[in-house]
Image 1 (cartoon, one colour):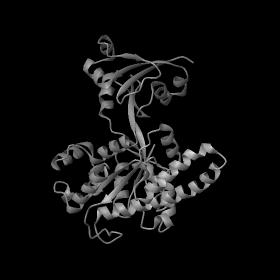
Image 2: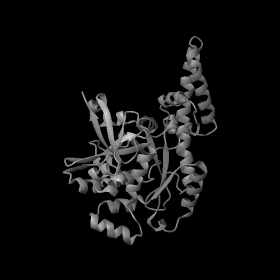
Image 3: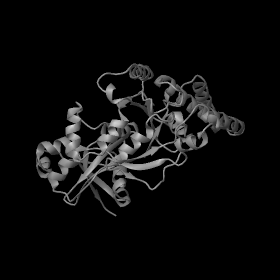
Length: 362
């Protein structure tokens, strides 16, 4: 699953990305350029893993991970090929969700592409280009599908869906603003790979001085995001980059001095994980404690397949205990004695933090 970092040039995307890459992430071997995006795998913070590792005296601890992509800055006219528009739009279609970095800081040493700090204008600039790009794609598809629908009535529903999306985009609204009651309609829309259909959150990049005293720009962005119903994440990318270089003890002291309870990057990664609609189930034993990634709503047999295809193919049942119940009991055997370990079938919906033991036969 890929989380794309987007925004205008000099908004702080690369600073944020590089800070994330210094937190134990693995950067893929892609040299940075304005055309080829930086890519890296990011471990998802999960304090449960540490406690399970202690409980089982596990030799290895493996967190879940998501892929972060730092995409080249977008400018006005990108949907028509201005700047690096074609490359930008090509890369952004490949990710599953978006973190839109919005500049809210003043810095005379870092120029703004439009010469002033106005986060709402910047958001509207980026969003409009994404809408234009989707509108062009929808119009082309609509012409082709409408023509074929004359002889294939099964395509008529797709025509109706495309027309609804077209009207929404022409009104300046993203495709994700439409609610599809029929799961099959939603599945069809997902196949269009529309940029504005992707989940998104705003990452407000503020100055260090604005952490405790929000600037007018930050206030304007908060009001805009609230009215739009979009999640907003606030951080100082420059400060996060400095924190990322500290050793654990120094990092803890620094955060305490700043009056912060945790690293902002950890919260951003967690927010991105949730934005992608992902949860973690866990496996635990003396050899390894590990978090596995599945989509929210996944069933036990699907989750087993994440561990190994043989487990999915030969799935019999899953022994399940909630993380909290295991911690309260103190051990797996004690949890069993309390009746906290349940036996579930392949249709069981896996919950975040479930610890699974898969029984199978192949």
